[in-house]
Image 1: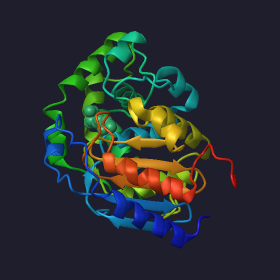
Image 2: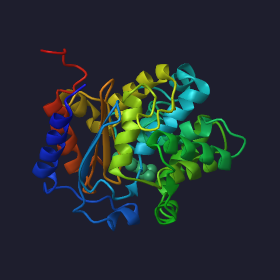
Image 3: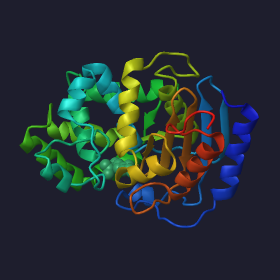
Image 4: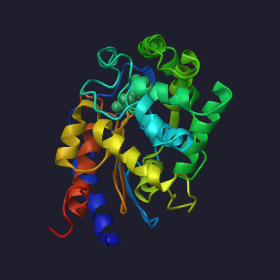
Length: 313
Ligand code: DON
């Protein structure tokens, strides 16, 4: 385990250095996100033994957005197992934007990844439930167990998304046409949109990531939330598609599985050690938080958290 004072210093330094970094712009295709103060910036680390380190705006509740895709994938792996996820959703980077129609068309309606919008909606459609409401309840429950507290939806975010999600509805219809939706496609789109509209803090996100880092046991509540053998599949999907068309750059420069959301959240996980979560609304053109990436990358480097680095070298 890393030394606590070294982690505290790394978190503080990364925030001090990058919290005011210029560049990027809030997402505006979801009106709510454009209204979030762009100056917010926070970064947090939670270790597998439950130690917590925070700097900046770690208590501000922001929209989870695409980070939710990781947690619904986790639920689906519990429900149907890794082979079915691999066969029906896939495990390949698309190399294209997160809401690409082209990627879907090129691959005959197979989404390739549960972390792009098409794959995330297909994932929701596969979650075991007798109704859309039950599917939604189960997704909210897994988010809550991973965070170690009750997570709630923001009606304001949800309204903002549901009234503007025409592109996602078109993708849902394409999936339906290709036979790659496994329950009602419009219900899946609706529940997917709700799962993107829950509010989390940077501190929550670090706990969620640390639950993955510990092989599925929440380090704060000590509850086993996920089957340990499912976690490597989640982390592999994050490596391949977590930052969309810059996932390869993230793997190359940081060397950790990552995931971003257009609400400004970003997460990276070091298996067996802990998780680093960043939050700041301005995004780069790919949809990843500019300051979040800088803060998370710096902490990972300072702590020597890199999956591809031979220990002690
Ligand atoms: O479906 C969407 O477009 C949004 N609700 C989520 C997209 C997102 O967060 C992409 N991540 N960087």
